[in-house]
Amino acid sequence: MTSQSWILRLIFIWASASLVLANERSFYIVQNTTLQLSRGLPVGNSPGSKPGATVVVERVRIHGLPRFRNLRKFAHSVKVKLLPANSNVRLPNIEICFHRNASLAMGMCSQGQWEKVVKGSWVRSMSPFDHKLLDIRTLGSTLENFELSVEEEFFAYRIVLLILGITLLSSASFLSQSLAFYYSSAMAIGIILVILIILYQGMKLLPTGRRSSLAIVLYSSALGLGTFLLRYIPGLVRSILTELGIDEDMYNPAYGKMGACKGVKYKGSDNEAVFA
Image 1 (cartoon, rainbow, N blue to C red):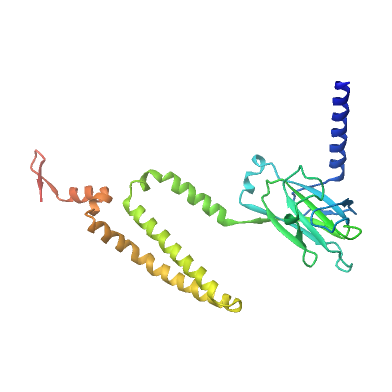
Image 2 (image 1 turned 60 degrees about the horizontal axis):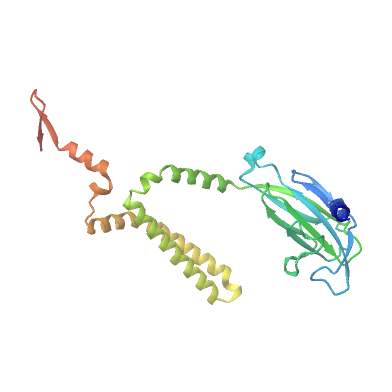
């Protein structure tokens, strides 16, 4: 009897999983592809809905690209868009839950995870290698008036940051022995933090309507101050190191060796060194 009960339980779990997967729709991240939503399935007691109300829910499983086969896509991002298929039709109010938790039943996201769609359009960014679930629910009768699409975006700054990171990593042994790098980086971080604090406090003190003009003034002032400090910091660092008793020969050994070699003269056939 025990073995038979376990077999029945396994069959029930397999049938439930098959039913859930059959109700899910798959969407693969490929450029210029769209997916028309279906009518959806009625679900009761969905979190955040009215007690006893039945909502129409559809789940779309978004499959990302294989990471190792698409390494050239590391600088890309994907925009997932839910747009009305026909703008002439009156659109029902819908809510969306964008998550990764495959253990949740369809339409059973917590109340704080549901996002209300404004003006019938919804856009979110995700990694092209990620896998996510998209639950859409409505109090209306159908979701057929919406379609799902993706759009790839290329960000050049990610390549710049990658090259900068590789450069810093390759020169780590040299930078770890440079006192000028330590002092200049510490001062730069301190200046940036002070500027951010000033911007934050200024944005809090002014009314909402004037924040845009204040931001322009503060950002332009910060840019001018940063340009001035960029020319002033090297001399300041050099003077600080000199006051600490660190000459240029100590934090730039190559310069000291070149200077020492300039003061040596060779005389006679025996190559006797004479210091000037």
